[in-house]
Figure 1 (cartoon, rainbow, N blue to C red):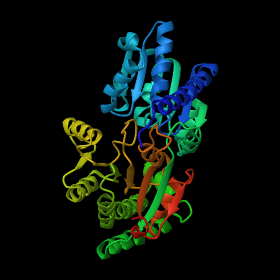
Figure 2: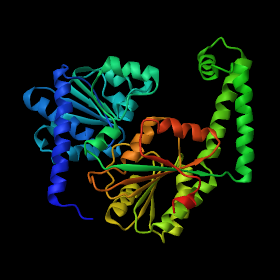
Figure 3: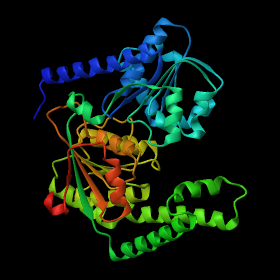
Length: 403
């Protein structure tokens, strides 16, 4: 159903009001703090407004930190879109990977979009070694890692918090429905998973059953640890990686995704895999079942191929977009009607970002999210943890119940 101009205008007005409230809270807290808002809220615009309003009134430069190189151009367009062309030449738009080049400098205002990336130790220098008179950090949810969370709270305490579900209730983004569907491992995959899980259990016992993760981390950081201790710690983490690789690359996830594409040929679909290799395999299969209308988008591809993939998907020339993590944050991919998630971890942040790719401005459109997971495996536990703060979740026995 086509949206009416009045409906679109009302939604934009609601979003504008909430964004300005978040910005107002930040100002009242002394121009230093974090906005924690579900994907689709429009944090990018808030960041642009913050920099624009500050630099129009004060001398100095602004720093806008973004997740990837690809988002630098998009951020530049955001300044133009919202009428801040006059201050663009006073803003450094930098991705976190290049932030080390912008240290020992003084900024009137710094905005850190998707700040959870910048909390990694390798990127923190941009916060610790620069002078930031004003600092605005933005992310979709409070970091789950205790050390990262403490660093963020000390750096820029939360001044405005709104969950994804609250965004839906206020009409800021479309409603969503998550359907979780189990898949079975092949016989070969089942043997590989069992072998990896047996090793995991064994080395967990060697490290101490109730604190194995902490103990492994401590041992690997301890230069005085014995060779046997280090071996146990490394094998423990290897078993975790091996087990995760089996479930992330389960063949039946590809087959089931193909069933969805075939069943709903009129819908535009985004898939999220756990690795670029699996994304390539997914693309190969879905390109067949969609009649050549699938495209890939991941970090190992050249920019020209990624740009064309997005262009084709937005124009309708392609109806399936296969991705890994590159689409998780920052990209606005309109008109996608179904999201298929095949690569899981236990982090709520990644899930919120991926669900958010499907939630656009239309309050009369439901974002369909389908999650394929390996039942009775560690992946099922990761899934339940990652969706614990989301609602409207349906658990089905198999794909036939959905189709």
